[in-house]
Length: 272
Image 1 (cartoon, helix red, strand yellow):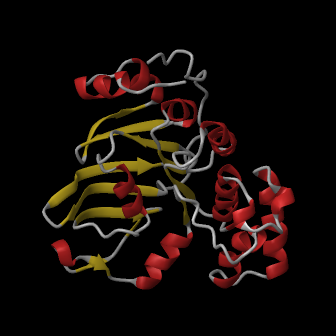
Image 2: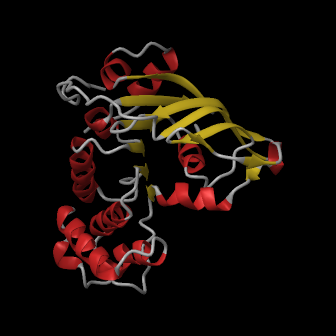
């Protein structure tokens, strides 16, 4: 893999203000006897892009889903802007103790899924406005104006009145990103946002993600696209068999990997 042509020139990141948006300490997650996460620590400072890489089954998507409490972990701490998630029970019986806290955290951590997850019975504009109006109780006219601006921002302003089935996969994923942004979240979580797309359509979505990274939005990105990871990340985490094998800035991870396992993974990765 040649990374010198992939990596951008390093640019300074503005100083952090306040606690990290997301902090994970000693997280353990299992599905029955299968240990998926084995004591993971991760921090997503405000304004930074943290990218999770690793082989399929390494725990990347599970870690992302634990961040916004779509999955319950069995041990460890999750903090949102310095506030720890409160739990009840232990081990396999551990669940969040405060559903109001869970709702508040989830509405501030917007997730973009691999398969778009747009509502087929709603227009694109309705998909984008639904949650801010119904969940956050914001004025519909205000939300609609913001939604139209966001659809224009991601390059599909002319598709506001279309149905999801009328859009290409790349357009649907950009609509999903606009939907996530319309919640005005503290952070965006991307779970393999380009893997379901053809290469040409992937680039439409990659451009949007790069533009968001340039705005210093807080993001956690799970991807198999090493070019994207190298281009947008402030910090890269390499997961292997449920543990962090190596982590650091992208120039270190891609140009000077320290572990044999990461070198093997990068050598097996093809960058177009």
